[in-house]
Length: 513
Image (cartoon, rainbow, N blue to C red; front, side):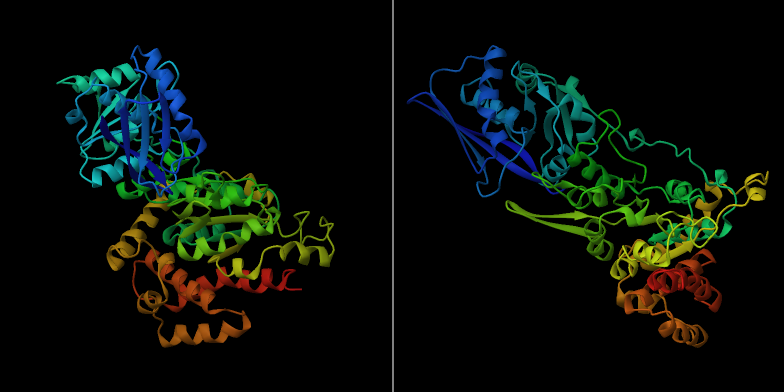
């Protein structure tokens, strides 16, 4: 007897629908599985057979063949276990085949028949919903995650026997779970800009960076507030839209980082990997090509503290994602494309000891300073929009009782600038930093006075075509913070200040030496 059950797999952060086909026939007893399977999928035969036995289902001595279709796509993971068991029970007459029409089944089985949670449920359910599937059976721990998808009736099950009861019951509403937009895992950001003392210029640069999602580099001595500012940038970013939340939640679902109780991510990600992070951890990959840090930071902030301490090969990985907003991974069993629309925020000391140019404290030679700064390549520096020198805080500033501006006040201005950008670009571009060359020319035009100013500094600052366009985009963001009018000399001058340090000091390899 032949039957098939719909299941699914993950490819990148997308879902693939897999047909689990089974045939139980007379012949030499055996359990064989085909369909380009990984080792953990091949092991499903033993898990399923033992789980059926311990769930009190008798399997006659027959030949069982299982095929996972399409056969030209490699299947990985244990998410097919439950679908295989259900398909076998349909073959043995425990469930009518018509009860499985338009039903998606996902889950891993324990040997005692318990159904365990799996990763990547959300993209699979999203794909199934897009194909017209209305019902899905998932592990109870994945039920809330699956219910994020609108229009899908979700059944969360704990055991194989409970799954069978649900599929055989005429009214199985008691298994349904539902979740709304307000039940995501939103957490109020307790880190606030009001806690940052002084550093007015640095706060202004962070505001401009947040308003246009510009890449941002801070250079200064230890204890000057670089990390403190970086950790508070998410508190001034606008809240996520629902489409952005779903995309981020899919990424974290595949990576296995979702909260089963409150799965929908409603905070912008803030990722701060250590400088010992490897290339595969940063870009993604490994045996299963899981998302890396740059993908986990999608629509949020990727903070790299002590930038020159990162391995050069790890930093160079960032070049393509910063330019294209995605990372492409080529592996033996397929190519993967992960979104990487993140805001890069980086911090570094001006030298190895951290105190240059304070020669009373700095222990580095001129050559050591240059060598330290040159660990960051010019192509990577070219992709940074804003760079700010962070001065040491004086005692008077630290001891001051002055009330600092809160994150809520700054976020209000940032949101106004984002609204201006959204109205200007419609649905094509989300923010200024994502403008392509033709869009930059159209929306970031300069008058004669501004154009003359940029022309004067183009050669002296060593600008490239890329850094010139980034200068225009930052000028556009500053103008948007100023009400969204035309770009003026004041806006270009401020953008040049953020670019001047980057072009002149860091590229010179020694702060002007």
